[in-house]
Length: 205
Length: 177
Image (cartoon, rainbow over all chains, first blue to last red; front, side):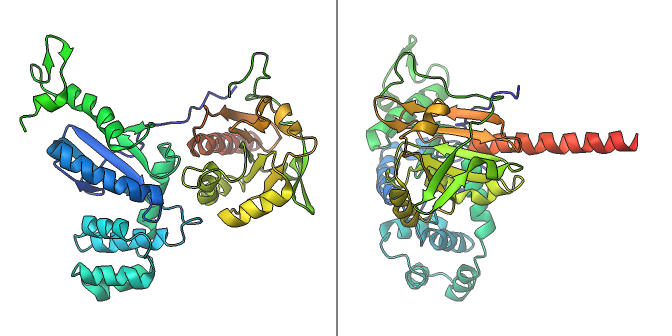
C-alpha cells in the first residue's frame, strides 16, 4: 500500500531575504505571507485590511507577498504581476503593489505603463520587460510554491509559515497573530505568572 | 451537511476504480477506460458555479501543465450538474479539461466511489488519483467547505511516475543480467 499523503498546509519554500518581497523588520516576531492576485477582488479587500494591520501592529509584523495569479479567470492578473516584478527590478515593488491594488479595475498594459510613469520608473526598461514577460518564470515559481504549500485560493495567508484557514478581516488576523507575538516574547515579557496578558498591554505604545 | 451514519466510505488506495461513461457535453461521452495507460485525476465537486477565487477547479485549471507532465495525466471534473450546465460553466471559467455530468441516474458514479451526500444530493469535494492500470492510488475527501488545493494530487502523481521509472529501470537491469 502506498503511504498516506496528506494535503499540506505549511510553507514549502521558506521566506528568503534575497528572493522575496518583504515589508517590515527582519526580526519581527510575526511573518505574514500572502499569496495574492492583483486582479482578485478578495485580494483587493485584503489589501486594505493589511494596511490597517500594519498601522496597528507596526514593527511586530513583517509582510511578504508572493504571486498567485489565476490567469484564466483574471485576464490581467499575469501582466499585473509582471508589472510589479518590473517595478521590483527598479527597487519599487511595494509602490507598484499598492498602485495595482488601488486601481484593480484599470490593469490594461496602457494603465500599467502609466503607473510606472507615475512612480517615476525608467519607463522604457519597464515597458520592454513587461511586454517580453521577462518575469514569467519567477511568477510561476511563486505560484507553484503556493500550490506545494496548500494554497487553495486567493488570498491565502501564512502566519509564521502555517496556513491561516480562518476569516481574514482585521480582528481575525489580529487574533491569529497575537499568540505568535506572545510566544516569541522573551521570558518574563508578555507573560505574567503563566497567565497570558493581552499583547496590546505588553507593547509600550 | 454531515455524512450520515452508515454513509459509504470513499474508495481508497488499492481499489479498482469503478468504470463509467458520462456526458461531458450534450454530444460527447467520456469513458474512463479510454484513459487506460495514463494516470487520471478525478475531481468530484458539489456543484458548478461556486464562488470564483477560492474555487478548486480554477486552481486545477492553472496547474494543468504540472498535472500533464506526469505521463500525460488526464484531469476530469465530475458533479451531478447536467451537460449544458457544464458547458456554460466551463466556458465562463475557461476550463481546459472535461467536466462530466453524473446526472442520470443522478450521482450514480459518486455513489460507486463512496462520495455521494445523500441528504444534499451532491458529491463530496473528493479527489481520486488513478494509475495507468485503473487502480486508485490516492484518495482524499475535503472537510466541509475547504478547497483541498492541488498539492496532494500532484504528490500522488509523482509517486506513480517515480514508481514506474523504478520498475522500468529494474526491468532494464533484469534484461541485462
